[in-house]
Length: 429
Image 1 (cartoon, rainbow, N blue to C red):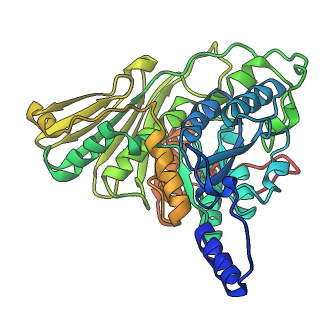
Image 2: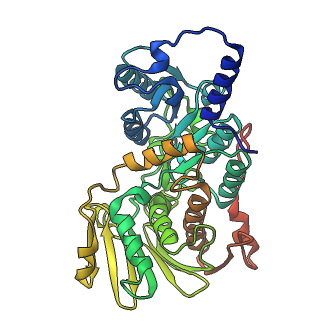
Image 3: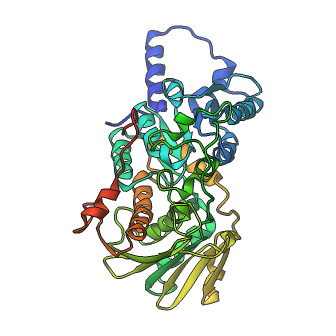
């Protein structure tokens, strides 16, 4: 199926009107006001998930002239109220609709695209439902909770010809783009190792059940994940429990595996073997390890080493070649290299990992042109797969062989059972 663009529909409609030779009036709303795009150029949008990340990225969308924000959705009344007030202030009216149930938002035919910034548990189910409802979407990472979810996501996006941008915004940041250029160009020789360092996972205290706060639709928050009594530890530390997340290895790791895959032109494949070790905190009730190292090997022998160690501000990605190396420190956007002369090739550019504006612009352009985005669904799924497979390796405590084509572990039924998870009714893919 190939969906027509909004421009195509408007051109056809204009042609029919001209043929009929009927008089009509062009309103100021259609023409656009100062700083506002005309109706034919606007992209109408809604937000799913009005937490910290969703609110931050929405700000970059609101700064774009073609965007007209129509609706927001969250299962928490306080966040929903804040998000609506922000959009209303931006739009200078009170027309933004606030929804508790995202299915009501999806039912609207006047919304072109969505920003999905829920927790990981909702990324794939909500995206699949949105694609079936005819929406394009920019979805925060990680794009899936399991490898099987990721493949289902990619199939659906392809089937419905949906424009999809994953929130791996480092593909649109100059420092990482320069690093990829260096790695590909041979300036550091033949790349043989890629080091990706995330931070150690913090310990979590014993979850203590307590009443669900007023205005918090907890059942919708849980969505397709197993039921647990409401606790602050599970809700506000959801990334450290297997049912809802995968720790910093995937929460941050997918950014780095995405850059590694991109630099290697491996957006449709991945490593073939995983081995690693982890340290678990016996006093922590988190499911994820405290520290770890996983060595992922590609078919050509290149090593991708994922480490959980150190503090949050010590994260980086380094490409090591036969004649040098290049590293980007994520917290400062500082680039270092050997030989240092490589750095003179970099232009004078600005931006850091925190800036999503260029990534947002790429998505909006592709909504209009129906072209593939910078971080399309297949690349996002493959980057996520590396992190999921690494976590499975650590959970089982043994090395694993992976078939990137079949997307299954070789000769390991126990590992393959962790490719997917049962979903809590009534939710399903």
